[in-house]
Image 1 (cartoon, rainbow, N blue to C red):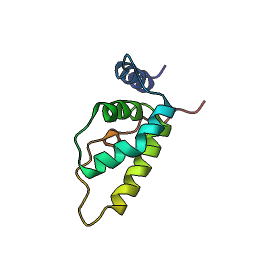
Image 2 (cartoon, one colour):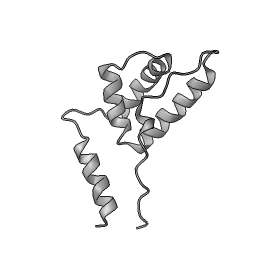
Image 3 (cartoon, rainbow, N blue to C red):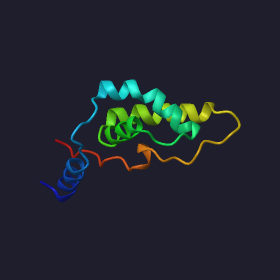
Amino acid sequence: MDPQRLARLVRQVSATEAEEISCAECFDLLAPCVEQEVAGAPPTERSRRLAQHVGQCAVCREEYEALRELLVAESPDDPAPPHRGPADRPPPPPRPPA
């Protein structure tokens, strides 16, 4: 196994929680959590759980980032607060060809 892939796997394993949300739960939390984030509300337990999932799931991360971009673009004259969510993390490296 190449060292980069091993390092990525170790990071993902170390970021796991005893209880994690599923993709279905993530999609249920996505809109309210992103709306709160864009409004500048402090993080909540459910937004932390969402962030943990989005940090590991590329599909949910894409949905999160798309929704956040849309909400920021539709925000009134006030600029969006500095981003402090999962999209701040760099995406995982691409998978090597099989």
